[in-house]
Image (cartoon, rainbow, N blue to C red):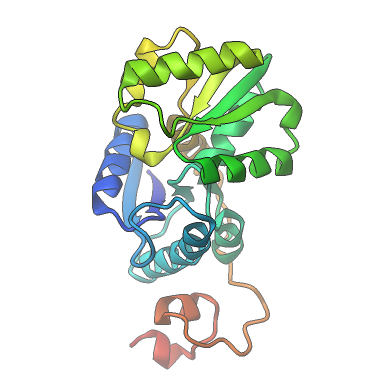
Length: 246
């Protein structure tokens, strides 16, 4: 059976429960799921400071989970913004699938343009930067925040549909772990198709988990490491074997 490590970069166990339920529903028993939550940082990530701290937190969470016996074939980074994704891939040597990258690449592979949306202006800035980094700017019609829209699926659907039509988008990529419970209702109310990046990422992780990959070591240069947790220090090879067992 495939083994997925799912990491929630924020500290909310309630959000982790929502994410885990979605992963189990989407994988339909085809994977052994290990869900873990960041042990430090913010319960809601909405600023660049919070994202930077979350990137550290996901590395620490992965190191701890694997030290305690998790042996994943792939990792799902369960945040529509993917804090620390590349570093986590470097640390573990495993495929790390983020909600944002997976959803954006899937949308970019479809005909026409897509509108990207989430809750929060700063997140939208960072998602716009990710779009450019991925080289898919020509496939996106814009990035819009639903911040300020009434907290109602029909209102969100109406706002995003109008934005999609105004920008010439064929579909909407709407992401954010906090939106997972209401996303089915938003999709049902929207006249413009909405792509669910969370499910896209989970399916991609399950597929990538089928390909065996060697367990990786951390970065080669681990000199002068100070102040990291024992789990992360051990994952980086900075502690002697005796210390790793303590």
